[in-house]
Length: 107
Image (cartoon, rainbow, N blue to C red; front, top):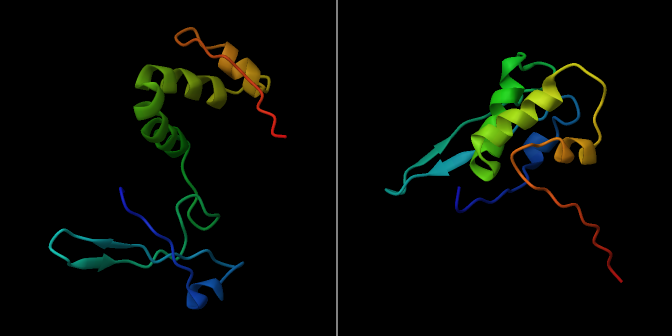
């Protein structure tokens, strides 16, 4: 994923908003190209995720950045039915990492 680019497709955009298709392509090091048409992305109403898939997706994305233990802890906090947490509460609840929260103002 070092090099990615997105190009709009008039053909696929005509299907929106009823559908959200995509046509990803991958170029191999030997210059061969593999392309597929995805009519509906995973998570779409026509292809819903089961209960475990959002957690797995979150862990796959967050684990390499904040560590798998921290990612699992955050997933447990967010995905456990309870009183809603604010972002500040979520960050402050972490026992394994010191988070500081700052506000950036532009002039």
